[in-house]
Image 1 (cartoon, helix red, strand yellow):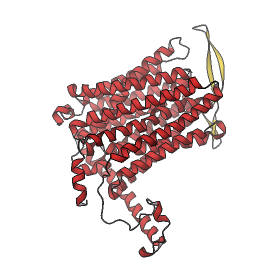
Image 2: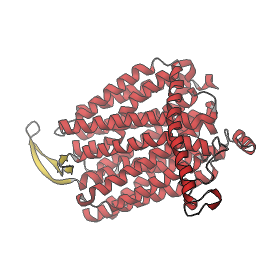
Image 3: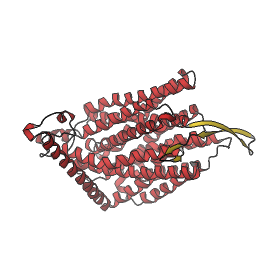
Image 4: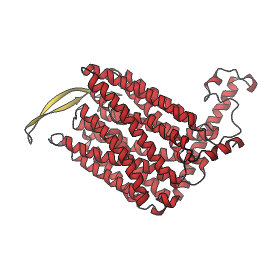
Length: 496
């Protein structure tokens, strides 16, 4: 590492401006999670993939209820339920992230431009959100799914680098609070934007057609919000990485300006390109070797072994439910759009409270016990979702209750997971990108498994209740495994 980087590295720990800049990226990018993943886009997708509604008479209540009739999506000659296709598209996006994450993390550590990669994925996600505005109906449903995939890749790809900054910029005693602060910023920012979108769609729109136009405008605003507010983060967050001395003379593929040079001083363009290709092949091999090496190193530590195993299993349930909850409310109980958005908005507000409560509770009873409480509440939510029936006159109130539980534990469990892992990491900070790459790859593998199982259960049973029930099994395994983590390591007071 160059000598002039040493003072910068030493001075960034617990720097208020840098920590604020880091936390504000949550404010910038969390609008994707709420607008695109959780609320407006899934509802918009469900509306555009619904052909009509039919009336069904319920003997038990003596009432008629509306049941949506969905368009089937044909892929390679076979027809699929649209919700299942949406689930599979998420699976594809996470497969891409799992493949790219270790390679990009290795590149960032090698070239020393971790922040540049964070910027790239941020811009990919933001522009993809804007691209969703071109999705107008079943005639271009695959365009909508494509931008949904690339937006997901942008969001989750950026988190690989974003999360890896946490141990770089904060000491262990500050990490719980900073991690929770990021989530709180994210929830507040995303709630503000959803309210703005809600005013456009529910109040300013005079009819259903105008509501669709304002929905597409909401996608444009979401991308602009993500792009615009992230600039504060990029301005103050330092470049951080272990720069190697010997690199290709001109990094052609990472520097578009170099593509148009003749490179005569380095043997010509084709010679430089050949060196670049060899460099990237070596990086790819090295990255996966490093990933397995880091995995072996982490799993040799007893606490990390049980924490990461637990994290994998409860992430299968947590992230999958988070991604599919809106389609559950729309497709399974046919909840009205305005009620569904307001419910999900309340979840975000409750999640802010939950993140703060769980962060403070961890100081008294330790991270392990806080995570265990959160997992138990997730199991309760899954079992309750299984027993939801659209013909029950109180189904909406039951859904609100489940949403309240999810909101309370969602922010808390995410924040505690990130900070707990950060605390348990070995104290060789320059490997943090690789360590967090492993963490993110593990999380994405969990999501791949979860979304695939969820979508497959929809195809098999034509409802989501069995899918929700299946997630409770993963939470239960995660609960058992987290109890094997040594509690004494997971207390802020004892870490500091």
